[in-house]
Length: 505
Image (cartoon, rainbow, N blue to C red; front, side):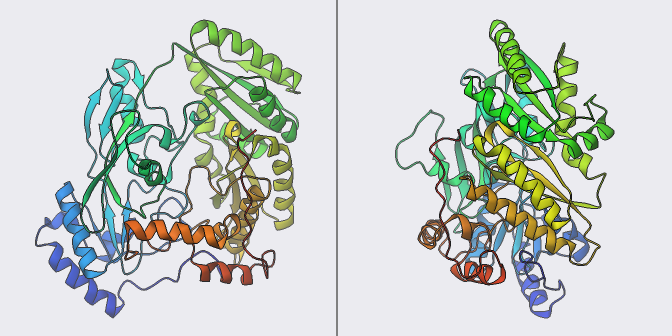
C-alpha cells in the first residue's frame, strides 16, 4: 500500500454530489457558466499535476477571470468550510496541486496577462498565469530577461514558480524565485487582498514575502507578482566535459567553485540520462561517457574569455576525458537542448519514472552519487541522474513500471531513502519542487516536532480554518508517528534534526 497516496473517494459519492450541487448553485450567481466545471469529464484533466502517479478528482473546478471573482469564491469557501487547492499550469512535480475530493480546485489559468513592463526600473508586473518564458520573450527587445528558468519554463507559470520557489539552470548565479520577486499580491481565505513587498529593494516590517514564496498555496492565493529583470549578458559560452567516472565528475564541480568561479549554470548528467537525451534530441553528447558536466559562463567578453580557459584547465585537471567549448550561439543552445529535454527523454526509455528533488552540500556529491548507485542496486530499480550540480540540487529519476504490482510502492520507498540520505549529509529534502504530498513523510525526518509545531502556527496565522491546500507541505504529529511505525528504518526513532551548514561548501 502506498505511503503517500491519500485514500481516493468516488466522484459520484452521494454526500459529495449534494455538496457539489449546493456549491455550484451559489457560484453560478456571480460566475459565468464556462467558469464552473462540475461534470466528471470536465474535471478529469485536473485530477493530478506533474506527479501523475497520484490522482484524485476534485469536487469541482472554477476558472475566475478577475481578482474580485477570486475574492468572492474564497469568501464563499470560507463560509461553507470548503477546502481550496489553487492550481497553475499543473507542471509541479510534488503533488502540490493534487485536488481534494471534497474541495474546490481554483484554476488561475485565465490570469495570464503581463500588466506592466518597466525597463528602466527593470521590473515586470505579471498575473500568476503568465508563463515563465513569456516574461523573457516580452522584454527581450529591451535587452532584458527573467533569470529563473525551470526546465518546464515553456509551460510553467509564475504562480506555480512562486508557490514552489522554483529554480532552474541559472539559479546557481542568479538565485531562485525568492531572489527574483519584489512583491506579491494575494487573497486570503476570507477574501482580503494583501500585498507583500514593494517595487523597492527593501520594505519595512517582517519579511513575509520570503515566507510566502515557497508556501505551496497554503497561506493565500497569489493574483499578482512583481519580478526583477536582468540585462542580457554581453556574452555567454558553454563547456561540455565528459568523464569516465561519476564520482570524479562530482568532485570537479567543487573544484570549479573552489577556484572562485560562479558559473551561470553548472549541470550534470550520468550515463543513462546522457544516452536518453542523445537518442531524443541528438545534441551530440558523448554517449560513452559515465557523466557529463555542462558549464555556462556569462558576462563581458573579456571576463568570459578568461574564465572559459580557466574552467577548461580545471576540468582537465579534474580528470575530464574530453572538454568541448561552444564555438557559436547555435552550439551553446545545442549543448543545453539535451539537458532541458532530459525529463521527457527519460520518459521514452521507461513506462514510468519518479522525479526526485533534494539538495546537498557540494562536498557530498561524490558520496551521495555512490550511495545512490548502491540503493539503486538494492531496490532493483534503475536511476538516471540529472541535476543542478553547482548548487547541489539533485534530480534522481527512478525508472519503474506502475503496471507491475508493488513497483510503485518500492519506488516510493527508494525515493524516500534518497531524500533521507540528503538530510543525513547535511542537506534538505527539496531544492525547487516543494514538499506537496510527495515528501511530507520526510519532513518528519528533517524537522523536530517543535519545529513542525511552529510551521503549523504560521499556517494558522494566515489560514485559521486550515482550508487552503490542506494535507500538503507540513505533516501532522500523527502522520509522523504513523510513518515511523510503517518504515523499518525509522521505526521507534524520534524525528531527528540535521542542521544545514552555513554554506553549501
